[in-house]
View 1: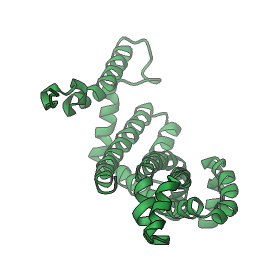
View 2: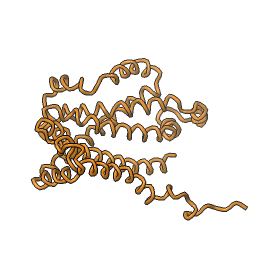
View 3: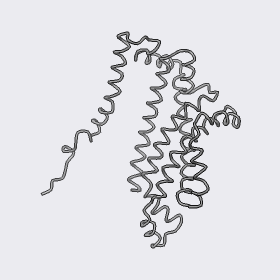
View 4: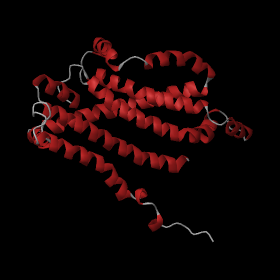
Length: 263
């Protein structure tokens, strides 16, 4: 007689608290080693300040209100750039993935553009859009575009042909075929592309905030390097990691809702 597994029988690592604790284990170890190395004097403070010094640098910036402004501006730029890049990436992916003509016309150019490093776009964006927010948002959107486009276009090309033919046999055409058959088949790939795009958007943020910016975490990195503030450099790196993790967690929640709805 087959027994139904209960929550008590589930493996320990499948439980929420265990996964959280496991995920925090390595960061705790890193901080502990960092504190031991800096506390023992093996590394001079001007090269690697103590964890407390980094916390204190954050507290000083927060007391003046600058820290929250840096975080808010960078987050806004990432969210807007990610949204634009993802929407355009999905649209172009649909054209390339569903149309042979679209693939022939667009794929070679997009493959070439994808190979261009992020910093190579900076001079051109400054020339075209000056040093305003537009140039920063566009650079982040470029970073978010390619993971979505590549993942979704490839998934659409490889939708099971038998599913498509079955849909057509029931009279589905064009939009109805896409909505009923092809879209549900590629939802996992869409979600994967969006998560990759979000990570890429945070990477491109630093390059974007090098465009004559006066606020933001990327600017804080650059300014701290100029002034030799290693504590603020580490603070900016930690904040970028935390914000990237937080926004990814939000996307994971949306992923679960999408998968329940479409898969």
